Length: 371
Image (cartoon, rainbow, N blue to C red; front, side, top):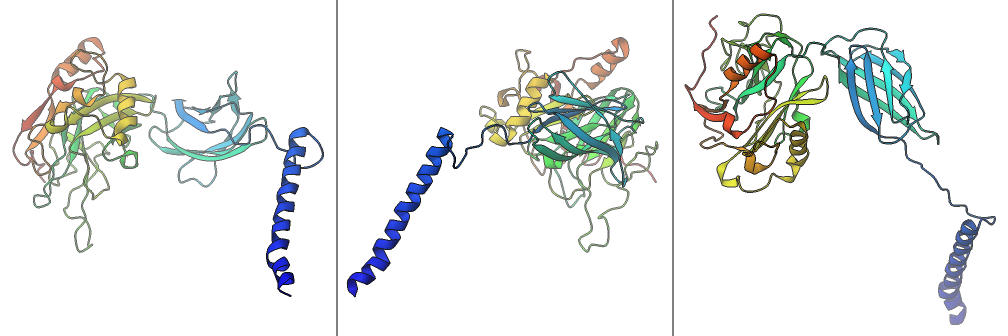
């Protein structure tokens, strides 16, 4: 009896495992040799991936893939629209990019969505839905002019970035982003007309009242309707267009890479690299690497030797800049010179460096607009 129990509990399961291994080995061998049995599929089984989207003119969207595709059925619609317009794909020679032609002209800065299905020659498909901005045929020439990364909750003063307009145009498609905050905090400027010599101040916080009754202060108004006197909250400027970001969390790191992108053509319009002095000899954090590479390839920041750079050693030394120093900001020295250069020749140097920036000390609150 004990022997029979041993056979049931130990020997039979062991024999079964050996048989299973032998059977799988046979199938594997048969598949490799081409005999009847388990066949191993070969080829490409992943769908093409999107490597880029560019809006090339007021009616055209270019979609790029990481490898050749074969077909695409896509529509383009405004963000809030229920239905879109079908767009036929026109492929380049190696089928790594497709151009979609819209039946109408896009509204500058408006939100659109390209959606549909892309397939390769093997039948692998990719379903996509990609937001993009309407083409801006008259982009303004904007540069970073002032940055304050300090704040005071008591004084209701928070971080801001001021832009200087060198050439008149529209702000649609321009985006501000900092490496410290990350891509998820990128701010897309609304479409608005600005003239050469004017400034645009982007206030990076719009605080709400602690009791939930509304905003903490009145007058935080986006001046997108052609009037420069609408915003009257703290830090509103009497000589700039004021814009307010729907955000209550701190922005701008003590050491940072700030980028102004022109998403109309995919270029980097300007950048500012600054660091606290005690870390100036080190490297950027790993999370800053992608934006540092973007600045380097864009050629908008140079080192002491005048060559394109995005190293921490080339950054402006933000001495005396702390999170509580609301009377201090990073100020660009050469905005007036750049503006004059643009007026006289229609162009200006696309690159800046640490030598173009300084630490400005001013009154705790800029000129407030009268009501």
